[in-house]
Length: 360
Image (cartoon, rainbow, N blue to C red; front, top):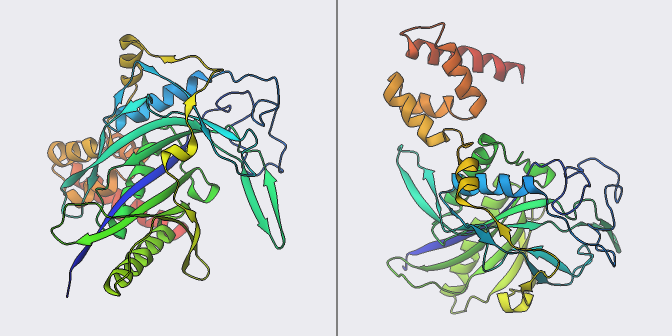
């Protein structure tokens, strides 16, 4: 029997927690607002209006790029990504294409044994969000409140090998963006979403085979289930003598099924060209270093410091760095447990967190 391995790459959209949208003064977080009440001529693409960039978007985008070990580019450009969909009022999306804010990079994904493995970041760019289509029986309703909300899109390399690894990556990235305070990453509210590019190959092969793309997932568990289902489908298709076709797929959580949405687009389909209404984004070295100086000690660095400095176990250090707030609380608690870091860790993990779980 042939042994197969999955080859998975992710495209993740993270909504930045700025006060206003990327090119206008409408508030960025419109969750819970009535439909189409948090809009203006700019974010709905009315004739004669011009976008004005929000500086905070670039500051938070650069901070995330730094945390992802991405090279922040001193000059980047916005482009028009052309496609037609009901919730995209301009008929194009202002995004970044070949000259984006971040170049390269990686994320150290923590593994169960305490080690890490690098997942490459092929691209990290800033763009505006589209609106939201609400499907009702026999009709589609459009809510443009989300138009113009600032996003960072990250594209990983094809470095993940299972649905579980993909879920772990999303979970750790969600933790990271919250840790450095660039996004709430509330997936239920659509503030973090991801697509998964999935293919299979025989164990030992190095070639990349045709892939499918599962779109618009905003739940880690549902995403894991969708990826597992697609891996099984592809193996069954190949074992039956068929070929994998490059389709964009939609996951139906209720019925646990994948359905074809459309053939997968290529970059040529979007007909990118430079956004004529926006100048280049320029960051000199002084600005870049000033932004990066605002990065806190990152989760893995803090976990390792706790292990070596406070002589606590890897498991305990992992729990205590599950959030930045908890890690800060542990270090503040040490002032009351001088010379007893293990005792402080045990009190927080066993007593305090146990009480919190009971209250929940």
